[in-house]
Length: 204
Image (cartoon, rainbow, N blue to C red; front, side, top):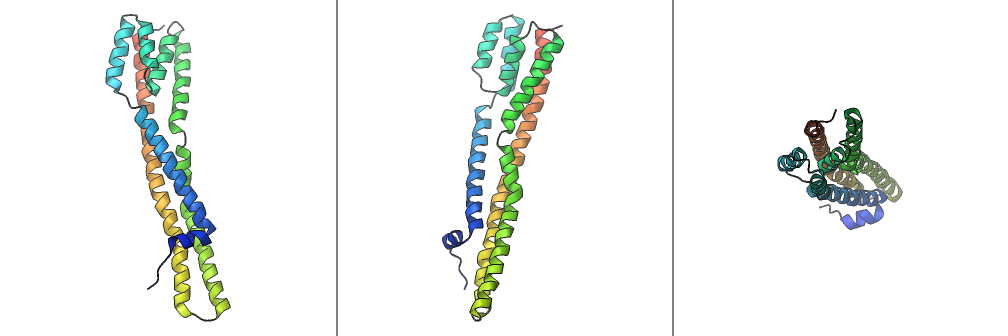
């Protein structure tokens, strides 16, 4: 029976070292993005109801305090709208559009890392497998003995890099798509509520 010593494979294969590093990166950025979206979670309906009430009563300072105490892209957007409510509508729209773009950049931060890892890790694993198979046959040619068992052991170790690459890439792609979906949904929320804020402020 062929057994594979994972730590020994990592020690002998530089591609496995790279893949281990990639797995640490994927886990770190997944946790970071999960915590970011958890931190900005907001009851949109309740927040907008309160903001609308303050605006209708012309209590702009109270509305601004509410926005500043809320860690959410929508709060930043509303804050910009209220702070510049005396500007013309076209000027205010431009400022709020710029804020939406800035907030989207913050939401997309590090997601490219997950997408990149999901794309390249299978190829890194495949590269390690090819190198491992070449080495296995090279060792067999040098030894001139050992038979299929020697080659089989080497190939089993080599294939481990492909399996590791896929094991890293699949969750990375899943999390990348999950976070990008949240970014898209939040972007739509920002755009829709920008229209509402402009209506509440009744800018010309």
